[in-house]
Image (cartoon, rainbow, N blue to C red; front, side, top):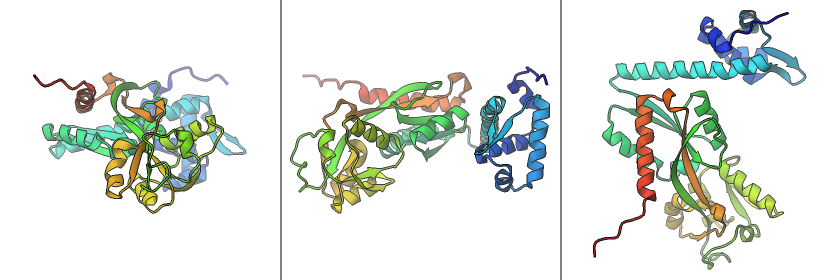
Length: 319
């Protein structure tokens, strides 16, 4: 059988959003029955929709294997573009609905745990104070998820550690933070002015945000030292980590700027890590500028200016 060579993007105009959503569900669930349950339909209806898609495209989109259903090469292309199309439609609906409510523009921001715990909320608040007709939603995800949702158009702006692979996206430098060891005042390392990461591996630790960028980096650095993390407990947030440390259950490697309020309140000591990689730089990532709304561009410019003001050297007062 010869398949049509027409680009999938051109042909997407023939497909309704329901069909695209069902195709995405089948690819994500790897099973038609589970996709049908997820979308509140019978399996036969889902199968018919997928078959109609394949007839329209003239190419097989799915293949069955021992592990379940998986997209073919054509299916992968359609999956990627279907997500973009549905994301654009959701943004269109949201933005138009908000115009009807008197809100002129909306921006969806996804940020890492550290970015949310530091200056990002205050920077966004400053933006909203001078752009009262713009609505900003702010959600937390791990870095790899932030990159995915920005690429797919489900979020307008991502703020994350710049060590993450953000190829294909437009990146702008944002702020930075510094990793330190948070520990009780009586801990053997508390009297040091700075400690190496290797020294921390001799003691029980508290892991933060399992699977996140910080934990991934610490695991990599410990592996390079031929060691393993000595995590006694894992928690999802920085405040919880400080409480666990205060209870004497271990030390924690945390960004100083985010951890300081809770650590000081708990009477904990923060000792800087001596390694160069302990200074982390954050980036603002978006899709290409031509795809951004006016409100998104305004917020990116505001965040860039705020970060540049912090990075600029302080001017000496006149003598």
